[in-house]
Length: 220
Ligand SMILES: *Cc1c(COP(=O)(O)O)cnc(C)c1O
Image 1 (cartoon, rainbow, N blue to C red):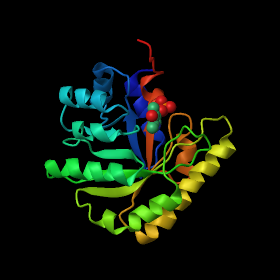
Image 2 (tube, helix red, strand yellow):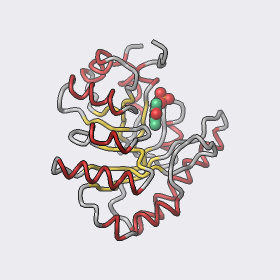
Image 3 (spheres, rainbow, N blue to C red):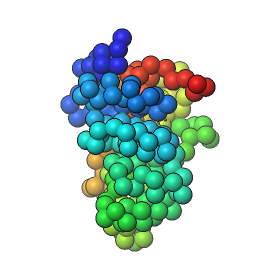
Image 4 (cartoon, rainbow, N blue to C red):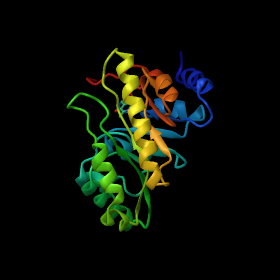
């Protein structure tokens, strides 16, 4: 199936309140343009340089989402255009995003990444750390960022019961934190293999790559 057909198929299955981020990492601009011409306007990348290059080349009505782990020294390369940063996992990173956003007189929307997986390799904050951060005075002083939700990545496993538990955990964490932080709106969870499950568990934003663009080839 073509990129356009894949997109149409996925979109036809999504409830209205769920936003589709087309994860285009490693894919050439020609593939992204196929998705763009099929109506897709939100793209997710996990490398800042690659995202900046694609942003420079492509139409300016695209929303660029940074979905990967962010190094503080690279925030400056996306601060002028990024729409949403999914993987914020420390106060220091938020401070840097705030500082760079201020230079462009912008407010950058961010999601806090919560560690929901068992694996040590997955980044993210504990619920306690996220809660403490959101209630701190230092946080309330950052005027050029806005935390608009949470992001989570489930364990890489075929055990769907476990994945479901992890998604449910993010969902209940969201509800708890939203009580004192009404700005929280977005739950970013679910990828090609598990987005239907994620939606059933309350996801409002799914990040789908290979089901749209085909498998990724990292050794080109
Ligand atoms: C690559 C990636 C995805 C998309 O993965 P697929 O399985 O190709 O849909 C989603 N989220 C993050 C954080 C990623 O790095």
